[in-house]
Amino acid sequence: MAQRLLLALLALTLTATASWSARFDDVKVELKTLRGGVHMITGAGGNIGVLTGPDGLLLVDDQFVPLAEKIQAVIAKADPKHGATAPHYVLNTHWHADHTSGNVHFGPRAEVVAHHNVRERLSKIQRLPRKTYQPLPKTALPDVTYQSDMAIHFNGETIRLRHYPNAHTDGDSVVFFVNAQVVHMGDIFFEGRFPFVDLESGGSIQGVIAAIEDVLKRAPKEAIVIPGHGPASNIAGLERYLGMLKETVGLIRSRIAEGASEDDAVNAGLPKKYGWLSWEFISTEKYVRALYRSLVEAPETLR
Ligand SMILES: [Zn+2]
Ligand SMILES: [Zn+2]
Image 1 (cartoon, rainbow, N blue to C red):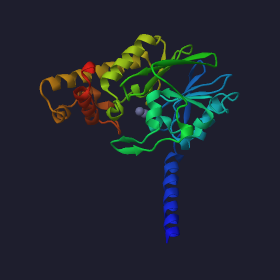
Image 2 (cartoon, rainbow, N blue to C red; image 1 turned 135 degrees about the vertical axis):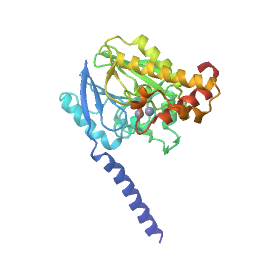
Image 3 (cartoon, rainbow, N blue to C red; image 1 turned 90 degrees about the horizontal axis):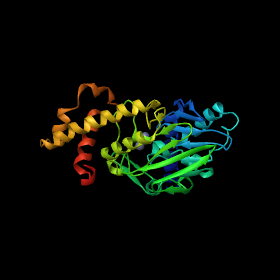
Image 4 (tube, rainbow, N blue to C red; image 1 turned 90 degrees about the vertical axis):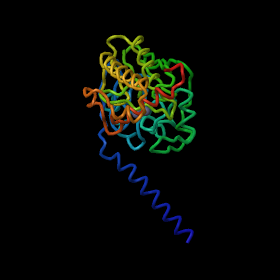
């Protein structure tokens, strides 16, 4: 009987694994070459930044494990000389699974680099409203962690990581490819859609705005900007996004000042011109609720 139960459990696990992989069978992984050896990969989950060159590969985020081979294949095609090697570095912009699950594949042979809080969170169970995430295996965890900023010198490029507190989460890094003039924003920037602000993981809309304002001061005008989700953008795109965030935050802030409840704010909605930014994961309602909660619950210093 016990053995039967074991077999049944095993079958269940195998089915679960199979359907998890099947979910990714049809995903098309594509690479776009940007500038100075920096490329952007889209597939499922967060956009990946790639630096290729004589020293080897550096990835910024790595999507989901079942996509790892497809990811490696498009890099090898873009840079036949260096792209077939295992990545030397994997940088994680934050802990979310759609940016870090690939660590299970790439982590054992790479130096995984992230903010301290990313390792903290990936080492423990994480609970979001719709899903619980198990800790990553040790070999998939960040090996090198930092507090406020750090630089990696690789492929003749200076790759600078800067931490932005309480933005999309409490462990966000923005990655600057200094010579190539390319910036990977992680999920501090959602191009062409409302942002997800993960309040459960220490995020706040005020932190997102502060982070973007700081990046705009540091990044050169010609910079190519890789968002966490959506197509590659530029400084003008990031400025437009910041404008939308500030206007919608200002609106919700004034509704709160007038005594509106969270539901009142949802019912009042947002200007029509922003309707197109609603998407399957973050509808206008979800975005307004996140803004409201972020403004009401944030520490005094952030309001
Ligand atoms: Zn994401
Ligand atoms: Zn995220």
